[in-house]
Image 1 (tube, rainbow, N blue to C red):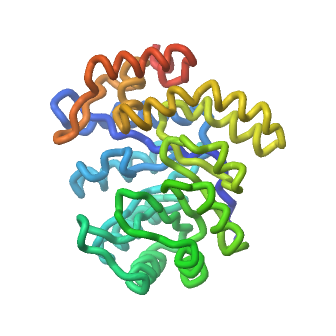
Image 2 (cartoon, helix red, strand yellow):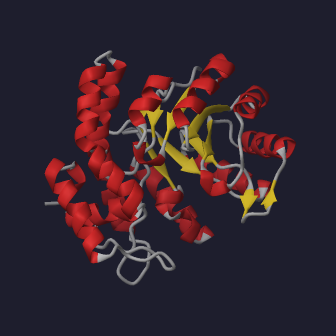
Image 3 (cartoon, rainbow, N blue to C red):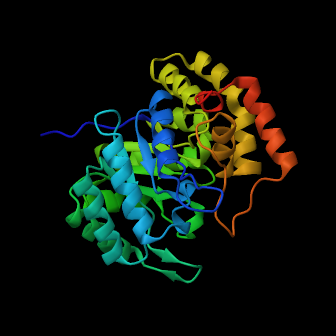
Length: 306
């Protein structure tokens, strides 16, 4: 049976915490409901913007089960299973696939600045994960890992491990890398996506991106940009993107993962915009600037719970 090709807007679901730092499970359900109402094409969970690096293994399991049982039949869910340990990444992948994940997302194996696998080790890492979960895999190519993933290597990875079909490119010069990946990889590159809050979306769409993975801050306003572009209405897409770019830029450069939580708390989606230490809450002036821009364009997250 042919698996559907995933395209469009697949934002990252934030992980809400209570004021005391516990995972807010009811808030997580509300986040997912809000995201579905945002008209997203899919949802990604347990990613870096989900604060996955601050979650225990038990919390990850709980959130995986909660999200995949709450959303089924509405939108596909991508589960992030990155880990330096191949064994742990494969175990995470197997659990996610069994629970109903539509796709996995993984960064290359790394730990700190000095522990990285070579190219053959990376291919083996992804191959073992693919053996544990026969669903598509998205490679996350981001500066956070400190691992250089060249276009020829990514093409070789896709050819060696058939489940590796999707690529989230969020490095400087993302458009050029996407263009090269599509040209050199051909049919092996099923899903070229960008990320980094969609801050280079128009250039990346021009380069051939078929999807984007922003935060859950304003996917309802990013979606029309992608759909207009895909329908050949580039001028309308560019105009819509120009309207929302100041908020995307503020999120990317000033607020990071805290932006979605701040807006969702303001909009009544979640009760608290708390992040886990050592992350710190937004400075009041930064928070005010973020909300000022959000109120100008009124994303659904700002009003969903009111």
